[in-house]
Image (tube, rainbow, N blue to C red; front, side):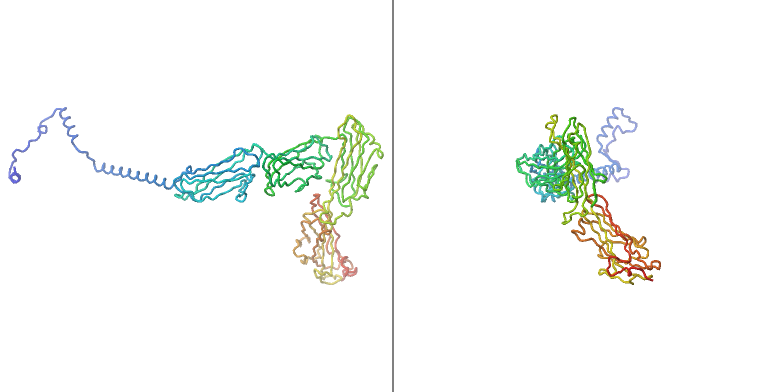
Length: 634
């Protein structure tokens, strides 16, 4: 049927299509298919249908796909940012190369190698090398002390990818045997792809296997208290390298009194500077002194050799100890000062000494003799007195022997006895130059015998004891007053008149004889009728007046030994006003009460003082004021 015929049939009233397809038999009304056939037909129909999603399912699927895409973008961006904005410090290589085992004092070259193994350049790269400040950089110009460390730094600038390099640091390694010295290298830098700073560090340790500078004391195992002793200290450089600018120090035990040394110390009495100790070189220092202690007591001598890096910092290369023991000599002797506190004495004082002696063995010894050697510029030879003894003024020695003291003919086993002698400190010490200060009186008593018993053959019989007495300084204070004075002009009636003020210039003059004094001060009080006028000379002196108490105090502080002798007198002048009352008429009156000076003796560690009488209106030091002009009138 063509198209026109189809239209005619379609729009014809009650028109019918011929050859119209019939419906399937399964869908005909009243037809029921068998279950197996129906199931099979339905399965075949579902398999032929297309996939169908509802609107909600489509929306959920869209959201899920969007989330997946977004997560992938975030993860990809994070990986990109991490690769661009992060840095792995493991990609910077840092190593130290040096000697694991060194000899103390050896100069060791430490090499620090570095390499940039990352894919980015780094900038501001600096390399630091640090070690204990007890060690010494060979080139100290680039070393900086930071706390307990010495730090040497190098600026490396920029390091390109795969760029490497190395730096050398030369250090003199010091320390005791078997000790370890640690070295730390640190590399600071900033990668070019980020704005953060990073650092890598590496440590290295060197063990000291030997110390080439050897010290040894040559001392007896047993020493006698009070005896003069000579001992030596030996030093030896066992290495092939020289040691420059070394310093040797000895710490003496308590009770040791230094006398002399060869060579002489370069600092105090216990330090020697050694400009160079050459390869395989050795030397000796011989020291003389006396030791005091109780029997059985060990006396420790300590010696160190090293370098003085600063006033307070001494680097030790090597050290040694010796500890001889105090023993009693066969003939024992000791001396003491009677009635003197802390073995100090005043100028002009009479001193009495007591000597005790004893035979400490179980055999008789004799004859014996006892001598006392007096060594002092402060001792007055005319004041020496020794009962049963003889004083020789030619060598200042007192001697007792069996001719003057029969008890010394023979000392039985365990026998003992006592002696006395006295001397006088000079009234005027010999101060003629700046070095004339810190005077002492040293007395050395010795007991000995020329006859050595067979049982003591080879034994030193002599016993010895030394006593040093320190002489206190003397502080002198003078207070003077003047009406006619050129430094401070005065006014008012003379003689003083009731109800009217008369001014005077008062002088305080201070002298110090032989030792340096500290915390020196002068003070006095003004009576209620005397006023403080506030004029002083020199104007910069530390002098103050307390109006509530009337006290004047002048703080001097330190006062040199020899002030008033080799140094000028310490002096201050000030003005006071005196207004008398009617009860004082026809008499002189006190203008300034008694003045007192005090100070601490830096040599003897005692406080000394001086005073001067009150100053009256008759002003005895002013020649213009007669007796009549010093009395108050109405």
